[in-house]
Image (tube, rainbow, N blue to C red; front, side):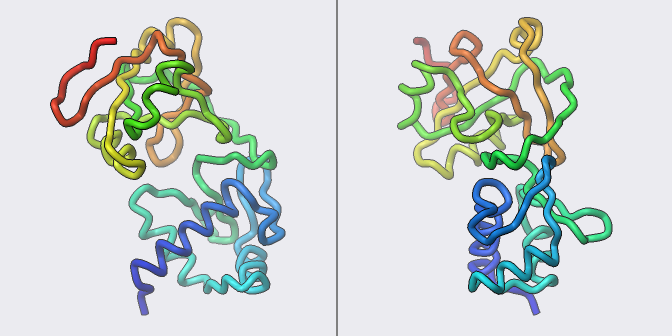
Length: 194
């Protein structure tokens, strides 16, 4: 029997919390690549009043449109693909050449801070970037009225910045200084001069 969308979303949010940020919430250990034992995870979720069956866990992983989680081929381990802030996780990505342009979707309320500091990872290990405007728009919509930053990743890469692309197509870098950013108003589809 399939879980309801609401139940899947609740499980996904809780898994994001413990697999990205606070594994100590249910007393699990993550290795440096973010993996934890599935059976220990399920036991600890029961112990902490968040019961989840293996079939439900697999459904959460497979139904995630953003592919937030990854199961090992033998389904004995699970991890969040990216977005970690936990000190236990220090994923080792292979640096690759990015496309000439990448995008970052966010809410308009964050524009002033970004124009002051650039894009910073905050509590996460990396800044998350999108390969296309549509994806950046979807990401930004989660936070309110959307604004898109267009990044000159070709110049950034030439200037020595490292880029990585995770298993689900999210581009990552440690920071994006202001000089590489252009503001794009997604509704009018125009660059905003600053």
